[in-house]
Amino acid sequence: ACNAFLVQSETCVYGEFRILFSTNTSSIAEAISAPLTVSIGPEFELIIVNGPVGGTMAGAPMPARPDLLINDKGGNRVLESTASVTAILVRNGTELPEGSILGKPTEPANRGGVTFTDLKVAVAGDSLTIL
Image (cartoon, rainbow, N blue to C red; front, side, top):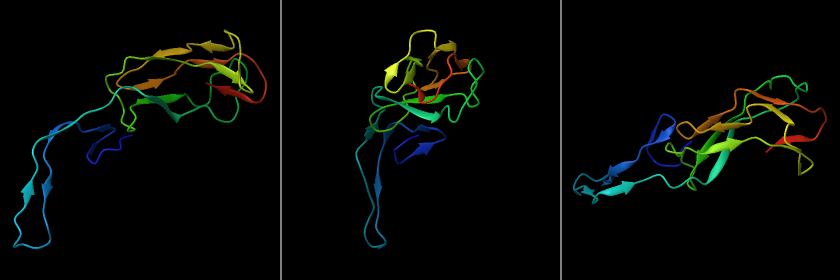
């Protein structure tokens, strides 16, 4: 995800650029800007790209593994992030005790992305949310 004008695969293009201005009239010369440095901001938010949806059996692997991105305020993926992300099970706004999530509930970021490959819900019930 990237909100910049220049996009290269999943990440923003950043570094030093110049902007070329032109018109639809050939008699007007083009103009080019001074160098402009485009950078990625600090870590700001987690974005769920693929998340647990629907239902699963208690103790069984989730049907869809949760994938998240760590973005800056502009919506750019922060490739340099080394943050660890922890999944916490919540029911009706209240965090459930430790042990209600099985597997590996904490994963480190890799190039601004986090994937939970071994996450299971230990308790049965409805209105459960992973925070």
